[in-house]
Length: 223
Image (cartoon, rainbow, N blue to C red; front, side, top):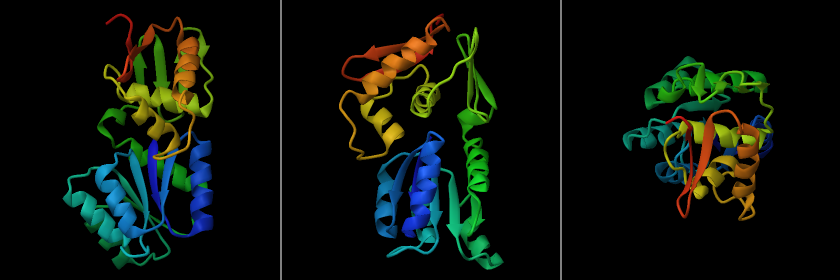
Protein backbone atom coordinates (compact mmCIF):
# COMPACT_ATOMS: atom_id res chain seq x y z
CA UNK A 1 0.00 0.00 0.00
CA UNK A 2 0.96 3.63 -0.35
CA UNK A 3 0.83 5.27 3.08
CA UNK A 4 1.16 8.94 4.00
CA UNK A 5 2.76 9.47 7.42
CA UNK A 6 2.38 12.91 9.02
CA UNK A 7 4.54 13.11 12.15
CA UNK A 8 6.95 15.81 13.38
CA UNK A 9 8.82 13.61 15.86
CA UNK A 10 11.79 12.66 13.69
CA UNK A 11 12.92 9.56 15.59
CA UNK A 12 9.37 8.17 15.81
CA UNK A 13 8.65 8.96 12.16
CA UNK A 14 11.84 7.26 10.99
CA UNK A 15 11.07 4.17 13.07
CA UNK A 16 7.50 3.91 11.75
CA UNK A 17 8.58 4.62 8.17
CA UNK A 18 11.30 1.97 8.24
CA UNK A 19 8.95 -0.60 9.78
CA UNK A 20 6.26 0.04 7.16
CA UNK A 21 8.77 -0.09 4.32
CA UNK A 22 10.08 -3.41 5.67
CA UNK A 23 6.50 -4.69 5.33
CA UNK A 24 6.51 -3.68 1.66
CA UNK A 25 4.61 -0.38 1.88
CA UNK A 26 5.59 2.87 0.17
CA UNK A 27 5.68 5.73 2.67
CA UNK A 28 5.49 9.48 2.07
CA UNK A 29 6.60 11.28 5.23
CA UNK A 30 5.66 14.88 6.03
CA UNK A 31 6.25 16.77 9.27
CA UNK A 32 4.36 20.06 8.74
CA UNK A 33 0.59 20.36 9.02
CA UNK A 34 0.11 22.83 6.18
CA UNK A 35 2.35 20.84 3.84
CA UNK A 36 0.53 17.61 4.72
CA UNK A 37 -2.90 19.12 4.04
CA UNK A 38 -1.73 20.43 0.66
CA UNK A 39 -0.13 17.09 -0.20
CA UNK A 40 -3.20 15.04 0.69
CA UNK A 41 -5.45 17.42 -1.25
CA UNK A 42 -3.79 16.43 -4.55
CA UNK A 43 -2.03 13.10 -4.00
CA UNK A 44 -3.78 9.76 -3.75
CA UNK A 45 -2.87 7.25 -1.07
CA UNK A 46 -4.28 4.06 0.41
CA UNK A 47 -4.07 5.23 4.03
CA UNK A 48 -2.89 8.20 6.11
CA UNK A 49 -1.34 8.12 9.58
CA UNK A 50 -1.63 11.61 11.07
CA UNK A 51 -0.31 12.98 14.35
CA UNK A 52 -2.49 15.48 16.21
CA UNK A 53 0.14 17.99 17.38
CA UNK A 54 1.88 19.35 14.27
CA UNK A 55 3.50 22.64 13.27
CA UNK A 56 1.16 25.17 11.58
CA UNK A 57 -1.93 22.97 11.34
CA UNK A 58 -3.25 20.30 13.70
CA UNK A 59 -3.99 16.76 12.66
CA UNK A 60 -7.67 17.39 13.42
CA UNK A 61 -7.73 20.27 10.92
CA UNK A 62 -5.92 18.21 8.27
CA UNK A 63 -8.59 15.54 8.51
CA UNK A 64 -11.38 18.11 8.36
CA UNK A 65 -9.88 19.61 5.21
CA UNK A 66 -9.47 16.36 3.32
CA UNK A 67 -12.97 15.20 4.30
CA UNK A 68 -14.38 18.53 3.08
CA UNK A 69 -12.72 17.78 -0.27
CA UNK A 70 -14.47 14.42 -0.39
CA UNK A 71 -11.32 12.39 0.29
CA UNK A 72 -12.35 8.99 1.65
CA UNK A 73 -8.80 7.82 2.48
CA UNK A 74 -8.75 5.85 5.77
CA UNK A 75 -7.10 7.89 8.54
CA UNK A 76 -5.39 6.63 11.67
CA UNK A 77 -4.55 9.37 14.17
CA UNK A 78 -1.44 9.18 16.35
CA UNK A 79 -1.22 11.25 19.50
CA UNK A 80 0.20 11.41 22.97
CA UNK A 81 -3.16 12.72 24.15
CA UNK A 82 -5.45 9.92 25.25
CA UNK A 83 -8.28 11.83 26.86
CA UNK A 84 -11.80 10.90 25.78
CA UNK A 85 -12.51 14.43 24.51
CA UNK A 86 -9.50 14.27 22.17
CA UNK A 87 -10.50 10.88 20.82
CA UNK A 88 -14.03 12.11 20.21
CA UNK A 89 -12.77 15.25 18.43
CA UNK A 90 -10.56 13.16 16.16
CA UNK A 91 -13.34 10.78 15.23
CA UNK A 92 -15.80 13.63 14.72
CA UNK A 93 -13.27 15.33 12.43
CA UNK A 94 -13.40 12.26 10.20
CA UNK A 95 -10.66 9.97 11.48
CA UNK A 96 -11.30 6.23 11.30
CA UNK A 97 -9.16 5.08 14.21
CA UNK A 98 -7.06 6.48 17.03
CA UNK A 99 -3.76 5.17 18.48
CA UNK A 100 -2.25 6.70 21.62
CA UNK A 101 1.52 7.00 22.02
CA UNK A 102 3.56 5.13 23.05
CA UNK A 103 2.48 2.14 21.00
CA UNK A 104 3.93 -1.11 19.72
CA UNK A 105 4.67 -1.39 16.01
CA UNK A 106 2.81 -4.71 15.91
CA UNK A 107 -0.37 -2.95 17.06
CA UNK A 108 0.13 -0.21 14.48
CA UNK A 109 0.51 -2.85 11.74
CA UNK A 110 -2.65 -4.63 12.91
CA UNK A 111 -4.67 -1.40 12.87
CA UNK A 112 -3.38 -0.60 9.38
CA UNK A 113 -4.52 -4.01 8.16
CA UNK A 114 -7.94 -3.48 9.74
CA UNK A 115 -8.35 -0.06 8.10
CA UNK A 116 -7.15 -1.38 4.75
CA UNK A 117 -9.88 -4.02 4.81
CA UNK A 118 -12.50 -1.25 4.86
CA UNK A 119 -11.55 -0.23 1.33
CA UNK A 120 -14.25 -1.58 -1.02
CA UNK A 121 -11.83 -3.66 -3.09
CA UNK A 122 -10.25 -5.17 0.04
CA UNK A 123 -13.34 -6.32 1.89
CA UNK A 124 -12.73 -9.94 0.95
CA UNK A 125 -9.78 -11.53 2.72
CA UNK A 126 -8.50 -12.97 -0.51
CA UNK A 127 -8.76 -12.42 -4.25
CA UNK A 128 -8.31 -14.76 -7.19
CA UNK A 129 -7.00 -13.89 -10.65
CA UNK A 130 -6.23 -16.54 -13.24
CA UNK A 131 -4.72 -19.43 -11.28
CA UNK A 132 -3.48 -17.09 -8.56
CA UNK A 133 -4.94 -16.70 -5.09
CA UNK A 134 -3.80 -13.81 -2.91
CA UNK A 135 -4.44 -13.75 0.83
CA UNK A 136 -4.52 -10.03 1.60
CA UNK A 137 -4.29 -10.40 5.37
CA UNK A 138 -1.30 -12.73 5.40
CA UNK A 139 0.04 -11.26 2.12
CA UNK A 140 0.64 -14.73 0.71
CA UNK A 141 0.45 -15.35 -3.03
CA UNK A 142 -0.29 -18.88 -4.21
CA UNK A 143 -0.07 -20.19 -7.77
CA UNK A 144 -0.94 -23.52 -9.41
CA UNK A 145 2.26 -25.05 -8.02
CA UNK A 146 2.06 -23.63 -4.53
CA UNK A 147 3.23 -20.44 -2.80
CA UNK A 148 5.07 -17.85 -4.89
CA UNK A 149 7.78 -16.11 -2.90
CA UNK A 150 8.04 -12.43 -3.83
CA UNK A 151 10.45 -9.91 -2.28
CA UNK A 152 8.62 -7.02 -0.62
CA UNK A 153 8.94 -4.61 -3.56
CA UNK A 154 7.72 -7.19 -6.10
CA UNK A 155 4.86 -8.03 -3.75
CA UNK A 156 3.96 -4.33 -3.51
CA UNK A 157 4.04 -4.13 -7.32
CA UNK A 158 1.75 -7.15 -7.58
CA UNK A 159 -0.71 -5.59 -5.10
CA UNK A 160 -0.68 -2.31 -7.02
CA UNK A 161 -1.46 -4.04 -10.32
CA UNK A 162 -4.01 -6.32 -8.67
CA UNK A 163 -5.88 -3.38 -7.12
CA UNK A 164 -6.22 -1.99 -10.65
CA UNK A 165 -6.60 -5.27 -12.53
CA UNK A 166 -8.02 -4.77 -15.99
CA UNK A 167 -6.95 -1.12 -15.98
CA UNK A 168 -3.76 0.62 -17.05
CA UNK A 169 -1.52 1.85 -14.24
CA UNK A 170 1.00 4.51 -15.26
CA UNK A 171 4.70 4.01 -14.59
CA UNK A 172 4.70 7.18 -12.48
CA UNK A 173 1.82 5.89 -10.35
CA UNK A 174 3.66 2.61 -9.83
CA UNK A 175 6.88 4.40 -8.87
CA UNK A 176 5.00 6.61 -6.38
CA UNK A 177 3.28 3.56 -4.89
CA UNK A 178 6.50 1.56 -4.54
CA UNK A 179 8.96 4.26 -3.55
CA UNK A 180 6.96 7.31 -2.46
CA UNK A 181 6.39 10.63 -4.22
CA UNK A 182 9.58 12.31 -5.40
CA UNK A 183 11.84 9.35 -4.58
CA UNK A 184 15.11 9.24 -6.47
CA UNK A 185 14.82 5.98 -8.40
CA UNK A 186 16.45 4.87 -11.61
CA UNK A 187 14.40 5.37 -14.76
CA UNK A 188 14.25 1.65 -15.51
CA UNK A 189 13.59 0.47 -11.93
CA UNK A 190 9.88 -0.14 -12.59
CA UNK A 191 10.63 -1.93 -15.88
CA UNK A 192 13.06 -4.30 -14.12
CA UNK A 193 10.50 -5.11 -11.41
CA UNK A 194 7.80 -5.71 -14.04
CA UNK A 195 10.15 -8.10 -15.88
CA UNK A 196 10.93 -10.05 -12.70
CA UNK A 197 7.28 -10.28 -11.73
CA UNK A 198 6.29 -11.50 -15.18
CA UNK A 199 8.80 -14.36 -14.94
CA UNK A 200 7.54 -15.43 -11.52
CA UNK A 201 3.88 -15.37 -12.61
CA UNK A 202 4.51 -17.33 -15.83
CA UNK A 203 2.06 -20.23 -16.15
CA UNK A 204 -0.39 -18.78 -13.63
CA UNK A 205 -2.97 -17.64 -16.20
CA UNK A 206 -2.19 -13.97 -15.66
CA UNK A 207 -0.65 -11.48 -18.06
CA UNK A 208 1.07 -8.16 -17.42
CA UNK A 209 0.84 -6.16 -20.61
CA UNK A 210 2.72 -3.02 -21.54
CA UNK A 211 0.66 -0.13 -22.88
CA UNK A 212 3.44 1.78 -24.59
CA UNK A 213 3.67 5.31 -23.33
CA UNK A 214 0.84 4.73 -20.85
CA UNK A 215 1.85 2.08 -18.32
CA UNK A 216 1.02 -1.54 -17.46
CA UNK A 217 -2.11 -3.65 -17.16
CA UNK A 218 -2.53 -6.98 -15.37
CA UNK A 219 -5.49 -9.23 -16.06
CA UNK A 220 -6.70 -12.80 -16.48
CA UNK A 221 -5.31 -14.33 -19.68
CA UNK A 222 -8.68 -16.03 -20.28
CA UNK A 223 -10.49 -12.69 -20.60
